[in-house]
Length: 501
Image (cartoon, rainbow, N blue to C red; front, side):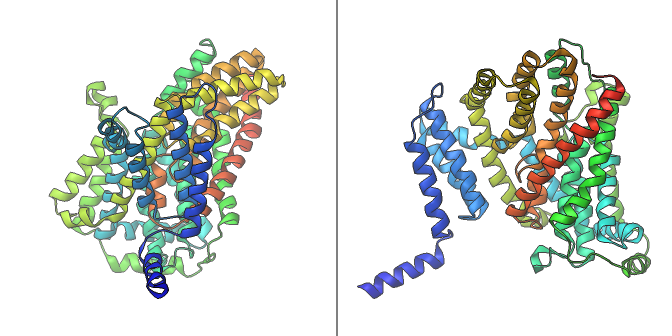
C-alpha cells in the first residue's frame, strides 16, 4: 500500500504542472484574504474579487504554474464564484469579456506581424544595420533603440504598436544576430539588456508627446478640469514641458539598466566589420523583404493617423484595425502563411494570460474597488494633517504605484486620475498646483514601467522570453523611482524656468 501511495505521489509530482510549496503559500494567501473581514464601504463580492486578484498575482510571482495556466485558473474561479454576476452564465461572460478587447487583439496581431521580420530576413538586415552603426558596444545598440523610439513617438498614438510592433522585432533581430536567443538559453548575452531598454524607452517617450499613447488626450482633459481650465496642455505645450526631463530619462535609462541587468557581451569590437560583411553578403532587398518593409511603412502611416490629418476625421482608423490590415497583407502576399499564424505560440499564450489580467482589473473597477481605494486615500490624507508637499507626494506615489492593480493605462487613468487631481487641487496652494499636475501627467506614463502586464507593450516584450519576471519587476520598480526623481528635479527646474510656478 505504501509503495503504491509513494508511486502515486511520485507520478503526481512529475505530471501535475505546479510547484507544491509555492502552491501552498498561494493557497494560504487566498484563505487569509477570504477569512479577513470585508473592509467598510466595500461589497463582500468586491472583496472576494480582490482576494482572487491578489492571489493570482502572488501565484504568478511565485511561478506556481505557467502564467497561462494561472490565468485560466483565475477565469475558472471568477466564473465558479460568481463574484461578478448572479449566475454562472453571467459570470462566465464577465470572465471572458476582455477577450473581445481591441487592445488585446492589437497585442496578439503585433506579435504575429513581428514573425514576418524573422521569416523574411528583413529583421536580421535591420539588426545588422544597427550593429554596423552602433555595434562597437552593446550599450550603444541600446541607445540606438531608444533613439528609434523617440523618433517614432510623436507620430504613433499607440505605444503598443510602436514599442511592440515596430521596435521590438528590430530588437529581437539584433539579439539574434549576436546568437542571443531564449530558446538556446543565451538570452543574457545581449538580449535581456536590449529587451529591457526596448521596453523602458516606451513609457518615457509616451510621456513626452501628447500623441505618443492613447490615453494622453484624456489626461489633457482631466488636467484642464482639475485646474479650472487654467492649465491647457496643447500638443506644443505638452512637448515643451516634457522634452527636457524626458530626454534626461532617455539618457540615463540605458545606463541604469546596464547596471541592473548587465549584458554578458559588453564590447563587440569585431561586430561592425562582421555586420558590414553580412549586409554585403545578403545583397539587395529580396521581394518578400520589400513586401515586409512596405507593410511596416503602411502600418506606420496609418498608426500615425496621417490619412485623418490630410483628409479629415472620417479616415481615422483604430490601431487594432490597422494591425489586422497589416497581418492580412502579409498573409495574402504569401509573406506569412496560415501555419505561421497558428504556430506563433507566444501570441496565443499572451492572449490568454493578458486577457485574464485585464478582465480582473476591469471587474475591480466595475465593482467599485478602485473608487473605494481613492476615497479612502483622500480621507486618510485629510485626517493625517500632513503638509501640502507631503500630500502631493503621497497622491503622486499612490496613483503611480496603484498601477500594480491595473493591466491597462487607459483603465487606470479613467478610473482614478481625475479623483486624485481634484484632491490635489483642494490640498495644494494654487501657486504649486501646476507642477503637481505636470508630475501626475508624467506619472501616468511612467507607471507603465512597473509590471509585465502594465500596458500593451509589456506582454509582447515579456512574452518573447528574454527577461524573467523577477528581473522585470525589479528593474521596473527602480526605473519608476529614477524617472519620477528625474521629472521632479529636472522637470521641476524646467517648469520653473518656463514660468509654470
